[in-house]
Length: 315
Image (cartoon, rainbow, N blue to C red; front, side, top):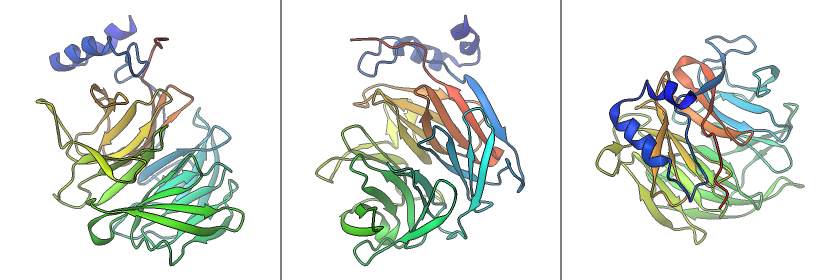
């Protein structure tokens, strides 16, 4: 009944894709809810609970959502039900990069803003450190991801584009060592798979450039796969932005030009566009509570939650 309701709003190509995706096995997805909006909050403004440019989102250890509002230079904390809990400022922004927010295994919140340092906050919003070092020379920090080892991965637009993998002593807030992956072009958002591969989007934030794709960096820290700009005969990325991974290894990519979110299975052989309506500039995305896709809808100044799956195949 619910599937039929949402399928009425899909074109013929998406209907065919829906039927095809019922056979997914590798990802554990049995059926997909398209455009199933289950929560939304925000609106334009500078007061509590409002946003100007919500560009990034992460899960906190308490099960809440931390939203980075680049327009207001603030982090706002919400429950999954949309109840505002806290707001704190992280300072100014570099005009070339929108920056990101991420949560460490200890519950600290990391904020990048296009500068050489990553700001470290307690969950109460107290800034306790700026993480920077001569060993970690990121000049234009953008995306952030916390790896399983509690190292961090930072995307950087220096010299075309890099990813810095940074080992940190969190007791001393000191950078221990860094590895650098070159060969990217304006990398933006970044996510980590269960195998510690890195998923990096290359967007078109300021004009038409090379990129428009997702790059997969393996454990040897080399680029092992590029997805896009074209995928098959009928699908392409234009300006991919946020990226995240669910508990089954499926990964999701927002496209702020096409105003949609696409899901791929773990080996990227199957895909489906799971959100196609009522987005304008989707940016940061994450998975919350196992089956909720959270999207910061930048130019609608809102945060939206979608239920994207119905059942699990146990194989």
